[in-house]
Image 1: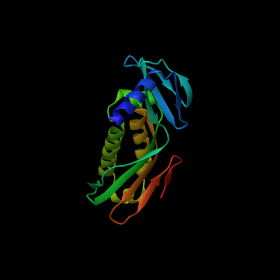
Image 2: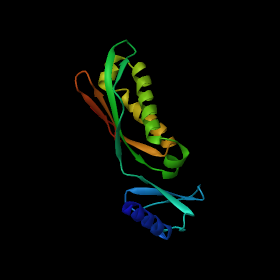
Image 3: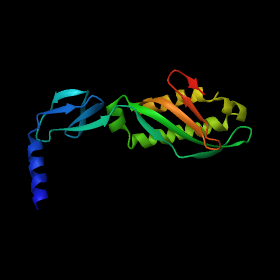
Image 4: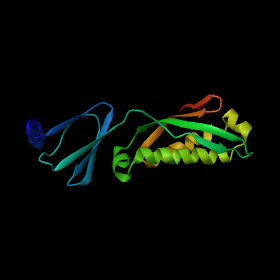
Length: 174
């Protein structure tokens, strides 16, 4: 009973909230009457109280995400077991939050599909040398940019022997 009273008091106080503070590594989308109105960056901002404007915030600092391990065949029919991890950051909160549902999961699934396609088109020796990673970074960013994010790093781990190839923004590091 006492907890419900505290919740009611907090909700009542939030009705009179005239400004919000957005942290350094966050972005926010303001909805007015349920429709997109504007995007806010870090700092203090005025909003219309009484539920007229709602705020949805998102973390814009780099976030790691790992895809499920995959068993794939190369172009010359070698079987490889790999796992993909990547670091992404939100660049457009409106697109990331409002235009797509479960954007993070969609990005992971699409990048995983790009990896599958790239491995199927690559021969074993080229796969081991990391030749295919250069085009993977471009493809991953194309996917992420459409959804309001940017891929900063991709890590491909060969589960058979534990080797990891890192693809940084500057290029491939093996």
